[in-house]
Image 1 (tube, one colour):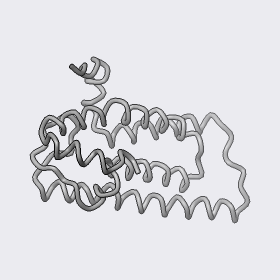
Image 2 (cartoon, one colour; image 1 turned 30 degrees about the horizontal axis):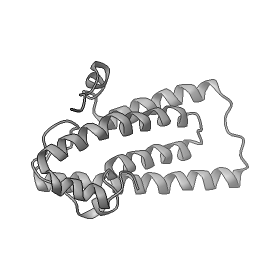
Image 3 (cartoon, helix red, strand yellow; image 1 turned 60 degrees about the vertical axis):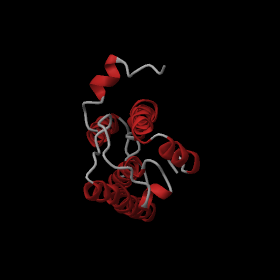
Image 4 (cartoon, one colour; image 1 turned 90 degrees about the vertical axis):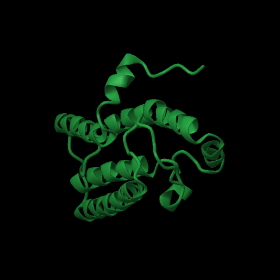
Length: 161
């Protein structure tokens, strides 16, 4: 028998994952205010900024596409809620978690646009939380709901990339 999430995890799961990313980013911005800014040449700053724009745009697409797919399938995007449909096409052919990959790209993109480095610290904590708490809960619910179909999917599709 697999143990359920702890009381802290259950409390955290009430905060939508995109908000977890956003709140972590704001903590990172606060950290950045305490640290020296990046010292880049104008050319390097421009490249850093452009890379951020590209990452952010890719992240919006990678995170948004599954939202549209879930809406069309009539299923939930909330961790822990029972899914009504199993979606394994589109970006789900490459990763079991394209929304989290997309949110991570958006986060990194914003860091690049703002020429920040400190938000990487809370991002690591968010990724540990998502990978260690949120995804296992989601996967256990999907396994309960879709059984061998989901297990087979997990065998051929990576969790992140």
